[in-house]
Image 1 (cartoon, helix red, strand yellow):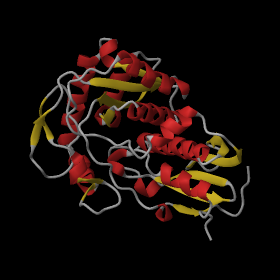
Image 2: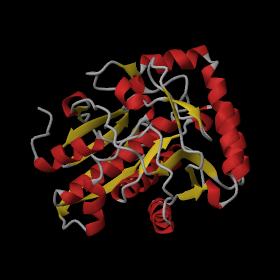
Image 3: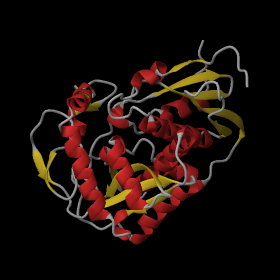
Length: 322
């Protein structure tokens, strides 16, 4: 029997599956043993067209690891997290070992409480400015995980990156393979994965940047003309950096949620190799961009569905050679 009967493990897994993922593909599996949870990349759920190098999938799993860690802390236990614990098994992204009793900090409680409230808000945001203190708090959250969050309007790069996002979006609109993959993950209400129509948002009629549209609706709305756009970067790249970036991304998003802010992604320049190279050049070649998203005050929306915990767990392999 798979060991999910303990309240700590159950709480951790229910939080882990609330992590964001491209097209809500949920590319994770959790292998369970006594006081051990292994986080595994589910290759069957990788988006082969827009994420062939698995970057976004690893970010998603890194976000799931942070959710798992926070929920375990709030449930009253410590944990040790090891990233990429086995060189001979690259799909095993993290090992979480549940430890002794733990009193959750105020910060852990605040972020854990935001896990269920966080969702990608693809609707227009209000024109209310994001206060300087909130901007600092979100930047600091990314810094705690070893990443940097660059707010483009503060460094004079918003127009340049906006043009890059628009061009990448246009390339994807003309790519039949990308459009087929997008349609495949645009789901009817009642599905436990993908993006349902109610969460897809309207088509942007105008505004600085194109928010990715899901579904067949042609409804259009005016989006904000002065969005707060953030680029999450790391000092290195590769699988380990991408998992860490996922943790940083999620800590930043949960911090934003706790402050009453909404967020959604501009994934287009991360999914077109030439656009990603240009973005890296714009930011300075020492910065490795991992995710692009907007922040602001969103009108109420809905969380997207998740697969039940039973669908994403399995027992750990019997042997554990290091």
